[in-house]
Amino acid sequence: MFWTNPIGYRVFGSGPGQTCCINRPLSNKYISPDSIIELATIKQNRHTMDIIILITGLFIVAMGFLVKVFPNLIAGYNTMPKDKKKNVDIEGLSTFMRNGFITIGLSIIVGYYLFEWIGLTMIADSMILIVTLVGVTLLVINAQDLTTIRVEPIKRSSHTLSLDL
Image (cartoon, rainbow, N blue to C red; front, side, top):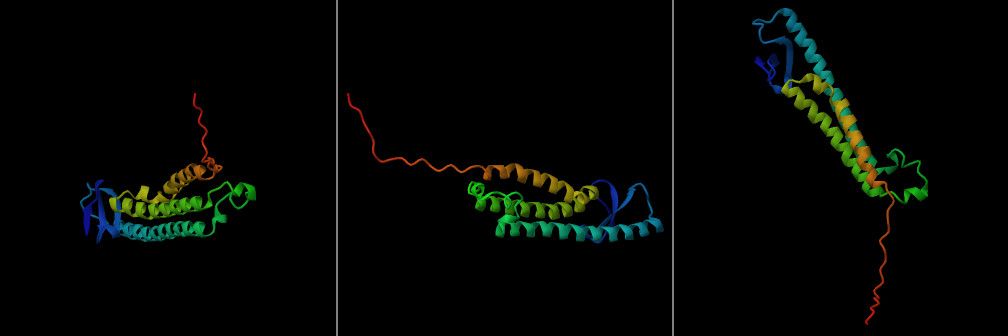
């Protein structure tokens, strides 16, 4: 079955989840035998990319859960002296890192299939690179708030002094 995707290319497949783009604009009326061989090759490469994306995304999600259970996996925390470790909110930092890794992993998977479905295969194939660079940059910048020195609240006495004139 053939139809036109949103950017004007003929597409082959039984549905959005199983599509392959023919790299020729819609102006070609008939498909040559070479195009069918090209379709089979593209379909096989798409399947390989699906597996790579799923493995990478699920690996990053798993790393998120491991960081929560084993906070020493956080870069720099395991080599930090004990007196500086006291200044780190490790519960908050490990929760933040877990949520960040899960978001990155799921964004890779969902973004790939979304762009694949739309027909933007070049962006879909770049999802690992794009999401990882943006996600890790945001994680590092925002994690700085959780590694600052904790300030103990000031203890106030219940006694007040009043001066009457």
